[in-house]
Image (cartoon, rainbow over all chains, first blue to last red):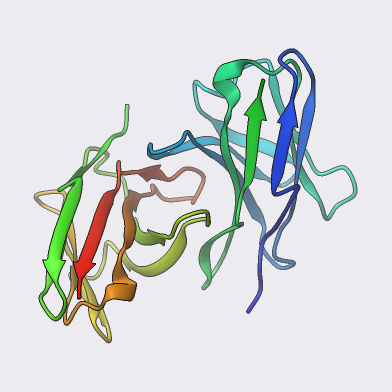
Length: 112
Length: 112
């Protein structure tokens, strides 16, 4: 069964540092997403990406966040200057016609 | 903005009993309603979904109903088993697939 792969599974970073979270989408999916889940809370939409550009973003996705597909396969989320409140699980998801949404297993980001 | 309300937040049932989780959504344009199961330390896994042109869908012990007029949809799990214990999230998505709004989740405990 096709999978969405996320790396790393766990990232610890100092406050103020930049982090890049990586995702390998399912190959024939065209819509890509990042979601965030603070421990014990609901899954929150961050951003959607289609046709090499952001199609929609939430209020959480401010200037500190960016996404790109640097090589046509990986889909990355960058946080430029991490804050303590950025600590959460970050899920990449992809959407394909007939498959629906498929989530990766997440990256646990801990900002210290 | 768009919102999805989910109830109850916690549900405890005896093995073999049925479990029902209910959601309401605010965006009348939503036309895709997935349900996800999230086990500890894992990403959400799609278990069933329904589109707005269908009132009910069933897959073995799991069924989902949709009332578009009332903007309600529900998940029904029959003959529950201990391995059904997890957090279940409902979600609603508008046409275009760009954004999915999640409910707050229901923690289901199935007691053996």
